[in-house]
Every structure is written in C-alpha cells, then in structure tokens.
Length: 280
Image (cartoon, rainbow, N blue to C red; front, side):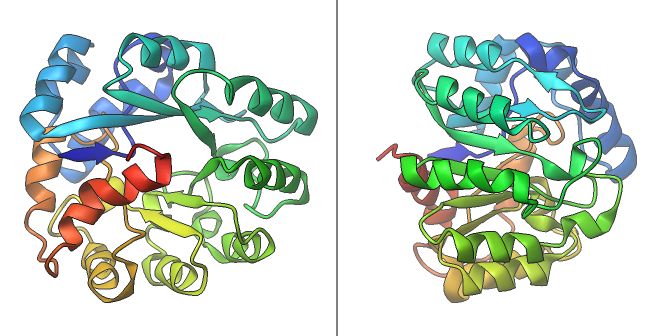
C-alpha cells in the first residue's frame, strides 16, 4: 500500500495550466520518462486504474497559487475533487506569497475544507522569486505551526529560474526558527541532494520528498536519499510520483530497484506520509 505525496489529477484547474501539458510532454522528451495514458487522455477513470495497478491507495494533491508562469489552480477545484473521492485523495492548499494578508486568509479558509492537511508554497516560482525564509512568509509558517498544519515547500532546479533557489539553506533557518512546524521539501531540493539531506539531519521537523528525482535508477543523486533513509532518515523520507511528470506504474517499478534495510521501504512508501498527514 502506497501514499503518493505528489499526484495532480487530470481534472479541474490542473488541466488548464501550462504546467500540466508541459509535464506530460517535457519529461518524456527530455529525460526519457514514459507518458501516462491517463494524463494524455485527461481521464480520471484511467488514473484510478493506474493507481490500483501501482498499489497507490491515496494521492496527495499539491495546490498551486504562484504568481509565476506556472499559473494558479483554484483551491476550490481541488477541494471539490477530494470530496468526490475522499478515500483516494487528500490535499494541501496552494497559498500565494506576495500578498501576506490574502495568503493568511486563504490558509484560514481552506484549512476548514474536507481533506485539507496543510499548505503548499512555491517561493522560487513567484514573480519575483523569493527565498524560503523571506520575512513575508514567516507569518504563514508561524500560523501553520500553531495549527499543526503541514507545509510543503517545492524546491528543485526546475522549480524556479535560478538553480540557487533550490539550495535548502533558507529552509534550515526556517526549521530552526519554527521547530514544531512540519516541513516537507517537495522535489527534495534536487540537485542540492547532500545539502537537503544535511538539513534533514540537523532538523527533525524536515521531511524529504524526492518524488521524480528518486524514481529512476540512473538519476544523479537518487541513491543518496536511499542511503540517508537506511542510516538516519527512515522516518522522514516520503514517496511521490510527481504525476503527470512521471507515470505511476513505472515510478513504483523504478523505486523497487532500490535496496532498503528491513522495514524502511514500507515507511517510505506509506507509514511516514500516513503519520505526517494524520491518516493512521
């Protein structure tokens, strides 16, 4: 049984973004990933078939409210879809960062909606981009810490126009300042793999979610996430597909190439995310 920490269904606002169409086509042509039939056909029925075939019980939908070119996905679209499929999906509300008052209002509104487990922010793709410890974000972190909500921060070389924005040093400062805030680093700051692992080593409230950067045996740096899980990160590494960038069945098959110490694989695939999101 698997919880997918980054699964964006082919429905509602997601299908209208530049990013959805780009992900379906970009990664297969650039990296050689196969394409997901459900994403190509925009079919939710096919998605459920692929989830079942891959052993994925629950998908976590990451919201998006960035001001950058990747666009916005209405949180109400995500909430509606999650309510229609409460056994298969939970979600993190997208929150924009350039208008603090509006961001806090959206946090307070969405946290009361069914299936919402926290917020998803993408500081590197705002316009202008922000470091993760920008002062205007701090009240959002503080409020999420007070409420016990999860915060996903998307950070990687492809999540922003400047690879330095994937450096997790600002997250280290945030995690130290808010020690009870549960932070998920989506994309796990690739290619700053060792730095992200170092932040997780120092900060017990930081989780790593490498998703597509761990689901290929030849992805540079991927094996280091596995080594970290086998040594000290067994309880804070979580699995994701990054669908539609990477299809589900092939992602699980690729992940199965890695060798874990006894009991660690089950934690990474299910138990860590279930505990983090309050699903067990």
